[in-house]
Structures are given as structure tokens and as C-alpha cells.
Image 1 (cartoon, helix red, strand yellow):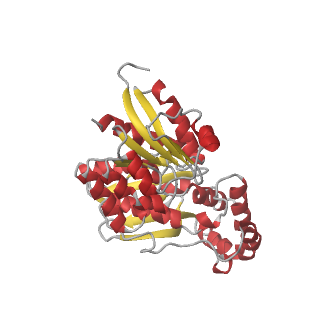
Image 2 (cartoon, rainbow, N blue to C red):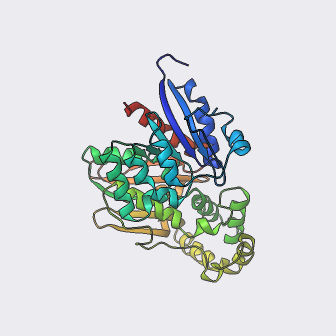
Image 3 (cartoon, rainbow, N blue to C red):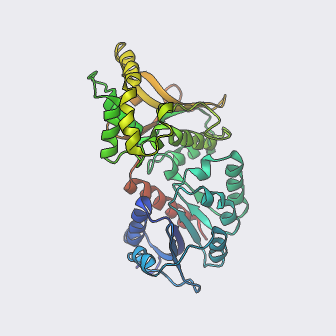
Amino acid sequence: MSPHARDVYIAVIGTGGIGSVFIDQLANLHKTYPVHIHLIYIAMVDKALHYADYREIDIPTAVEAMEKHGAQPPSFSTVVNFLKDAPRPIIMADNTSSQGLADMYPEFLRNGISIVTPNKKAFSASYKLWKNIMEAAEAHESFIYHESSVGAGMPIISTLKDMVETGDQITRIEGVFSGTLSFLFNQYSSIDGSQGGEWSETVRLAKELGYTEPDPRDDLNGLDVARKVTILSRVAGCPIESPKSFPVESLIPKELESMMSADEFLDKLADFDHHMKGRRHAAHSVGKVLRYIGSVDIATGKAEVGVQIVDKSHPAANLKGSDNIISIYTKRYGALPLTIRGAGAGGDVTAMGVTGDLLKIVKQSK
């Protein structure tokens, strides 16, 4: 450990796919950056581990220790009370998708506890919560970073913030925001004009390859994309009320919304293949392709999410695999947008974004 290493105290909530990788990155952080991470609290859904005297938990074995010695997690209010008396700087890493924890962000921030997170719900729920979070951070000199809430580890939010803070005028944001839906449409409506398989077969393939949520309807309903559009709109200065305040096209047939299980849904989806096949034929017949795109016009506040027919020269038409692409149109950049493209999903890159945010706070902390 470098003699000039910074001491940082951290609580980690969520040890699943992203959280486990984040912990691995914490364990190795001292090799690339002069920082000593003191893990003083770790929790998952049904267990938590911490010590009243803020004794350090060994990071490489933290999950194993929590599973073996952990107790029922305390309330989030109790966690705030525990962390507010910890040595500074203190950071809470929320690697969950919990709305309940997101609702507590203002309380963490008001007590001097900074936050790093990929949790989209904190920034795409009501606009009131968004304002409360940002005002609490500013008033109490706490930090909150959420780069990975859009585009995993892609530098989208930080880039957009830099544009806004340096005086650029954002006019429009659009792109493919879902790795799952990117993969589906790249397979189903390919740029080379070849006819892919049936829509239901493509969805099943995506699930088998691990691109979808356990229940593909959680991807096909479009809400994840709507959340990301909401977040970027707000960062750009457009006060969208919620992801449900603008048109969002669901790819789930209404007849299948109430299916009890993902398997039942997939079995029945084939009955509706003709709907998507007709849309694909309409696009291919004029030399175009289908893509699932989210967009917002910042000046008017008009946002929308859904399937579009796009030219093969469109940036979204040329994606590969599950890549994301976001185009930011601004007054400074003129007719051509600033475009960011890359892996928009995956535990490694998402955790990298959270770890990068952690280091931003370390650099700014006194």
C-alpha cells in the first residue's frame, strides 16, 4: 500500500451480478490507484454484515463472511444512522434496483454520505425525487454519481454533464439504449437484408444466450429504455415527470401480458409472429430496417420510445450484437451529433462505471 494512499470508508448494498464484480474491483483497486478502501457495511437481500466499532471487513472474503455471519438487514434509516457517524469520506454503493433504497437517497446525502450507483429508479422515478436528491447533495456537500444508470460503463452522463456545464445547448438525444433490444433487432432485421427467423424464435434465442431478463417481458415492455431517456433528459435540463409521461411502445401482445410465467409467455408468443413479420417486410421492402429507439427533443420536451423504420445509413442500423449507441445533438456540435457507441450492458462494464464514480468522489473529498 502506498504511504500516500487515501482512506475511504464504504458501504456496499447489493452483491448480485453487478455488486459481486464491483467488490472484486474494490479488492484490486489499490493496485492501480493510491486508495485504501475500508469496507464497513455489506448487505444483500436477506443478510447484512457490519460491526458497531466500524471494524474493517476483508473485501476479498466479504460476501462469504456475510453469508456465514450476517444477520437480517436493518432498515435503510438504521443504515443511515450507522453510516453518518463513520469516518470520512463515507460512500454508499447501491448496486441494487431497489426503489425503496432510491427513495432514501436524500436522507443519505443530507447526512454527508455520498452515493455511487447504477440504480436507474433513483433518477427516473418522480421528478420530485430527482430534485430532492440533487438539492440534498448540493446543500450538504455530498456527492452522487450514477454514470452506470445509462449505458453501463459508457461515458454518456459525464459527457452530457460536461456539455451542459460548459454552456452548450442540447437540442436532441436519441439512440438504442437496450442491449437486449439491440440484439433482438440486429438479429431479426439485419442490415444485409437477409430474413431472420421468427420473432418468437429470436426472443427465445436472446433469453438462452443470457441477453434478456429471466422474464423477457421485463425487456420487451420498453420501460428500461424509457427510464434511460428520462434520466438523460433531466441531465440535459428537460424536466420530464416520469417514464410513464410519454409514449412507450411495448412489444408484449396485450393478450400475453398476464401470462403467469416466462415459459408460458414464450410458448404463446409464436401465435403473434405475424405482427412483427409484417413490420419487418414493410421496412425491408423499401431497403430499410427496424430498430427500437428512444429519443427526446429537449426544447419541446417531447420524448418517445418504440420501433422505428430507419435507413441503413442510420447510426442505429449498423450496430453489432448487443451494442448501444447514443447520439447527442447540440448547438456547439452542429448538424452532426456527438455519438457514443459500445457495450451498454454487462456486469464488468457496469461495475467499472460504479468504480470510476467512486474514484471521482475520492479525488474530490477533503
